[in-house]
Image (cartoon, rainbow, N blue to C red):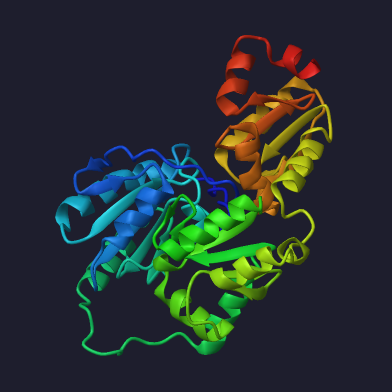
Length: 360
């Protein structure tokens, strides 16, 4: 089988002007497996898991033959292990989940304990024996009576925290997400940042207890939310409020961190060339099946185009979805106007209209 293309690198989710979400639809169940369609559903399933509970996140893609082989294995294990929750995630369709885990190809099975997103083991590829053995191993490990698990070294944790606080120019560590804050202080911080039209990334500390506790020591700040700008702690809600009241907050923000600046950056990018493709990876090395297919369609027309790798810039990756009101990638633009994604381009090609659209 050909090697599976890599997925997106781990990164927090840039965000601005959050809007309320509708109540999620009931989760689709396959035997005892759960197929999720949003990151919020994924997060809720893990948060509901008790101490010592084993969860398995199964990342798959419809273009992968290996995933088709593993689908039946996941269903069988789900039926045989009622005390284990198997969470099915279509890696390229459910935005934000694959980014959480250190995984670069599908199929991938990520084993988690206690509802925390730090994997205890990862099985890459179609390897049913390894998955069966791992499930049996970790579901039999009950919650210890004391802290007998091997602790992460403080150096490793500090390295991880150092990367997290610098993951975006403006980073918010909060309880929940901007759309679904889990405490009034996080909710108030989100409202302030929205009011100031700040583009920021966030990390939900409720999904990772190690980060939650470690950051208190790392920053010498015991409460949440915590706001960082260019890797440096600004403070919590009261500190940010004070900076705003003293008209000092905007001076702390790096260039390009407001909604207006981001929108101008996006306008400039989509007008870089007459035909612009925003994709995962480069034309010579696409990093998802959908990007590979759209590159093939464009190459077959013989019309020149330029590309932007959205994996190289999380601000662009998340911001363009809102700017264009198109939630997935790839995205094709002609003369600064959105044409659509792979489905639209495929339909244009099948109808014999693609070249005319590209020539404008």
